[in-house]
Length: 314
Image (cartoon, rainbow, N blue to C red; front, side, top):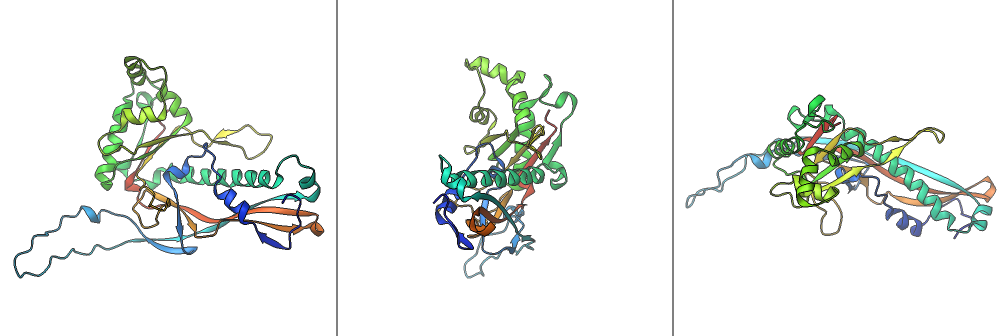
């Protein structure tokens, strides 16, 4: 396949499937805003609210009419997806001379860059204080920050769990912790005391989940945001995630292994169904062709009551 010429534009199903299976463990944004397919680039989706918490009389006497729910006014969110694409130019000589699969190398690099861009967009969206209600966020400072020995780390998480439960009726099951915050948590006095009592030397995300979770949180997952980026090759890298913690409720995948657009959730990365493809197209008289990945998607917050932002945790 390497070095082949391409007639104008050719979708490559093998490379497309290869790219769809791509996953970089450094990127954690999809834990909070998983991909859900939508049929069109534009759609109107329901904003998930508290309709299920309104009590209704369901007692029925003999020969009486059936009880009816008072229909709630359904608010909607108009979504409009956008196209993202990146291409890697391959000279036919490079493809012939390479000691490795040059096309897969090209697709890997393109996918890495597209995934990094998505991670940056998700981070900007979920760490925006303005997106959350007053009861679904906290800004730590001074002695309340986890980097301070006197901070009440476990109480902050307990309060956050309760705030989400009261606001949305859902239990937090996804947490993304910035890497520098995770360092502070691992070295926090309350945590070190527990590790010492248990004869343990280090803290893992799964162990921390066990320490902080409550009833109904058996599926709690914690991921550490360790990705970094730079806008120029000769510049120092900087962290994507820094100082903050984002907590959310996200539904489990359906039986087919996919997330469904109408399931109540903190948010989704909506992708137009079948829009993700890898293709190849010619240029420079056919001596250079491009391996290109195209996706049509956009990230949305739909139920911020089911999320909680801990700002400036360190």
